[in-house]
Image (cartoon, rainbow, N blue to C red; front, side):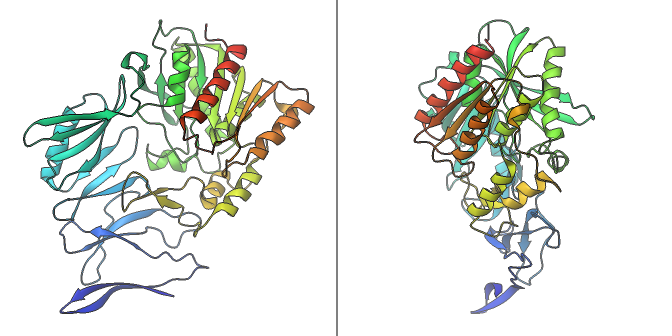
Length: 447
């Protein structure tokens, strides 16, 4: 099969890029994303390392009418979203995912407008949700501080502002717990960033802690409203969301450091965060539990085998990595070597598919991590499983529940009858929150 990009020249179509596609060699067909910076060239997404084994890194390039490719315009297409001028259609910059969304603009006028956009919400994470045909007209999404997330229309040419609405209209500002970023050093010297959410009431001294590692590992927790962290803080817990090694959004070095560390130093990074907060006097190291979804659930269960935790909560958690990889391969619908999926927040953009078999295998390393050993579990465990979870089937949690009970361990189990992996509905989150709060009250009271 041959892939071509053709351009209209002098009344006829002329090939400017031709590539033979070999499925066995995982040859990638470039994706046409839009127009380049000059409005004449084409912006394409292409593999940056076509000869490498395993999942590839993708970057954006400009393809000129004579077939010449530019140097890469970004660092990693999985974290960079192209921004196009709404009038000309030309590439104007990139949005970069991280603790907050940051921007690089090639268009100085748009750069100036965005500087004004930042001024609308000092100290908050501000994202451009949409632009009008006049780039001075924007819809902005802001979150942080006591704002759980809100949309606003601005016309920076006239100064007009319209408040559109809140992401969580039923959550009053006084209910929102404060969040800040902390940085600490892992045992081997690696710098780790984390989000710290503090209870709205009382002084943050010697409090009970819940460590809340994100799913992935190829994901990150940035500044903004996290529903489960807010639930826990409202009940009096300090919440730590560590961006352990393997996380994205904090530099390529941190992401690469997670390869082969699924059951290794990625886990110790979380425990190092507990020690850091204890040294600061913020938490009581004897009153710590760990909770997480997906891979975060695996981390919690490993913590129950041995770690600074009184209890562990796995929400749609992975208890058998070999079975998880098998399921990921069954679910893969495209060439897994690409490890990309469409970005739901941006047209013509992609993001890393953390459930790609190739990426999962990379984090496993040369040997698939062991399944959770029920006899080795030392702390009480809560398992929450979604009946319709296609990523981590509920059978994983059911099987572990049975093995824990057979081994005489303290294990609670809640199955969500109408939910999927991501707990996307209010009902799913309410059921999960109630189970988690009740379990923590029994095994690690906040007061």
